[in-house]
Length: 449
Image 1: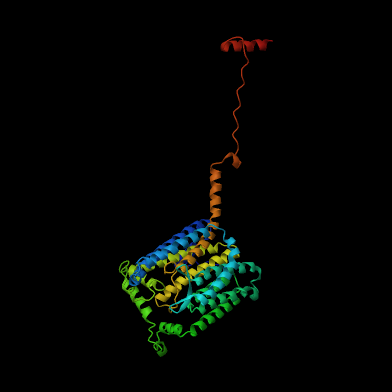
Image 2: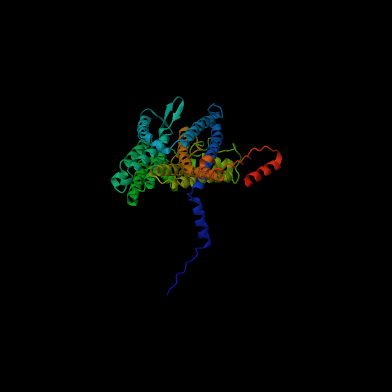
């Protein structure tokens, strides 16, 4: 009779398995930890972003005749507005946001159409509308509102998602409509992020694999088509692949200039950087130093230590948000939280890959750090939604602690046994005599009778 022998996995496998179990902890105790990790990482990234915007934009502000603090003060103002929105959203029930799904997506489509009609063009992209002296970018708010709308629709169709018609319609057509309006303004980077949001929503909704793969392939084909349709984008892709076609040099353009100067900044930073505010690439050598390529300025001034710090903060944010999303039993909060996680972390990965030369330059800001008020407010409000989910998961912990406190110190209202009052001693009968002897003699007289 053959005996079954259980093999013990090697030590590295056990260590990785233990680390993964710690990462995906979904008990009630991990909810409070996740809440404070998300809050702390977000505040730290926002503070680093305001500091780096001050450093990266000061030179251009002085050259334009403005105060060197202009860009940082504007970023801080939007940061205060975003933190206020984050605090408000973290204190309300996420399910109440379903009421804003249809008005939000309607306003998104209207604003994206208005951008193409009355918006202003900056560096070839038409994405902004001037409002009271500030530039508003509706495509940044479209990310959050699209995620909210898709979570609401997929939640209503929870029992019908096995059918490809209900799984893809109307989520995919509306998502493609938003992406089409964004690419109309020649912003391929934001378009790719919108498509990423659509794919993430389908994934967390549990759409069948074959439908998910089909939708992913179609969206990838659409993204490639948008890239091929623009000679500028194709030149960026050719440059990334190490080629230099003649038509890319026809107009005197140098598509390697920005990437090379970004790499120069990262390389010159060394281990600990050249010092905060001491960047050389921001002196008109690196285009968009305070926006898309602010990670290069950060690496130059703070060195490898600073870049690893930012990577660690995004990693902490990823683990904490993943824990919160994994605890959601209902479809609506799971799709909404998972889509927000894919959006923010995916956009951060695309930006850092672009700056380091791993991916072609497509113009995507780094969340919480790059200059841009609309992007900062949108990301902070999205984190507020995730914090609301984390606070809701913390309620069982609070309830258990309150129950334990009542058990240790019971009160009359908690069902604890009441203390019996002492019985009163019987009063002796009055006697004519005085003292102890009189009482005893009286007792003898009663006994004799």
